[in-house]
Each structure stands twice: as structure tokens, then as C-alpha cells.
Length: 256
Image (cartoon, rainbow, N blue to C red; front, side, top):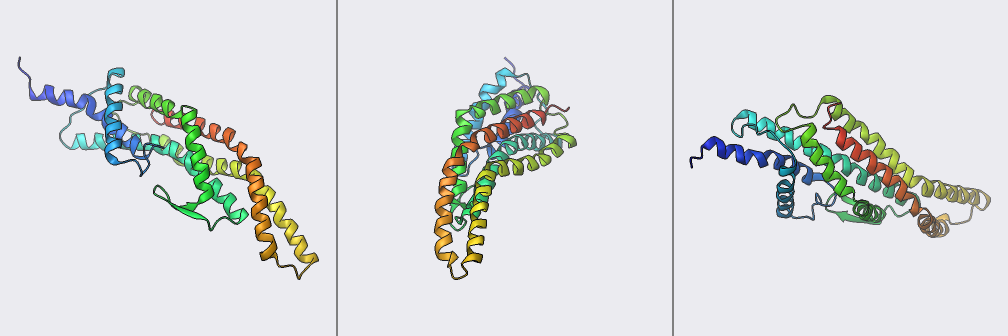
């Protein structure tokens, strides 16, 4: 049986281009894209996912050599990065919400070094942990894989890549990230604002009162109580954010 070089290249390209897009997704996607996950594990996960995806979709096989192949590779990586970044912004909303609450209750100095985002408040770590568990419990990771498989039908390898309108939609989703963060933090921040106003009235009524000695521990104690009462507000906001992010990831390759 005669096997030509072109047949070999076509066979490799059949799985190569999906692998490039999936690798771009795995670079920034939540959980698998964390810096604590070794690079070899990410590559292995991308390879296994490619073996599962390739039989499910009928992808074209662009040339693997030349300048055109390099352009296709950059486009495929950009598509994967954009889809993963859309989901990652949901977790950034958790970080912003936790940081806002921590600054309001006096826990802004209590920070930890996160390999993914650098130094951030402990409360943000707590919110990210809750978000990660909910992300897995809601099967959002499976929904993301479904969006990824569908993207090969809507935007096959070798196409024009992300449209300018879709890239702008990804940038505009940043406003949704900040609004979601404020929705998570608003109950606690509003309650702590009332506490701070009460201490302001007390300082005017009793100028000799040492607010740093009295107000700081009281604000922190009330902050933990308010946080425990409002932590249930995270679930519906996070679920809505994940729905919007998955819809955005699906629309990035729709071309419409």
C-alpha cells in the first residue's frame, strides 16, 4: 500500500488544528488553566479531549506547512483563548467582589499569594473557592466542552477567525463582570456602610471615643456576621454570570 506525504500531513492535520484550539482554551480556562496545574497535564488533557472531539465533528484539514499554516494556528489559538477568557472573567468577578467586601470590613491587609492572580485578599480566595465548586457542581465545565465542540461546526479551522464584532462583544463583557461583582458585594458593602455611618455619628457625639480601638474590631465582627448572612447571594449571581459567559463563548464562533 502506497502512502504519500500528503496523506500523512492530512491525517496529522485532522487532529492538529482541533488540538491547537483546545490547547488555547486550556491555557486560560478555569480549573484546568490554573498555574498550579502542570503544563504536561494541560497538554495531556488537551490531547485526550482532541481524541474525543475529532470523531464528533467533520473538520477541514488546512495545509500544515508555510505561512498560511502559521496564520491558521494563530487564529485557532485566538479562538480558544477567547472562549476560555470569557469563562475566566466570571472568576475575576468573584475576586473583585471579595476584594470590595474585604476593603469595607477592614480585611484588605489579609492577603495571600495566588499563583494565578498574584497577591489578593483572603476573602477573594474564599469566593473563588466557592465559585470553583459551583462551576463543577453546575456542570459548567461540561457545558464549556459542548460549546467547544459546537465551535468546530460553526467556525471550522482555516476560516477567517474571530470577527471584529465578536471580539468587541468579548471586551464589552467586562462591564458585565464588574456589575456581577457589585451584585455579589452590594448586600455586605451596603450593610457595612450603615455601620460606618453609625460610627461617624458616634464620633461626633463622643469626640473622645477612640474609633480605631473600638470601631475596627466591631466593624470586622459585624462584617463576618453580614458575610455569613449574605453568602447565599453568590449562587444566583454566579449562575447568571456563567450562563452569560457560556452564551458569549458560543456566540464568539457563531459569526452572527
